[in-house]
Image (cartoon, rainbow, N blue to C red):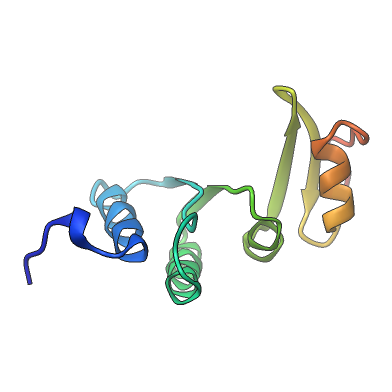
Length: 113
């Protein structure tokens, strides 16, 4: 099946972009807003791909403005405010309230165990 990438759905375009990134066999994959603008079904497929990459030992840096995505997909969460690190949290420590406080500069918690 040959189809111009621009004619694919947003979710399929994202999957193609991720596949292209994997062609070089990276040790770290940086995903910047990987599910922005895609439907719920495509998000689920992308999350499954990310989880498979993690299970295969690939390190992933996920940049996302979607709080449920950050809380659901991350093992460790780094928050920045005005260009500076304002918080570093494990999945267990992170809540929406804590992450938002760090994001708006009301909390500065770095390297808390």
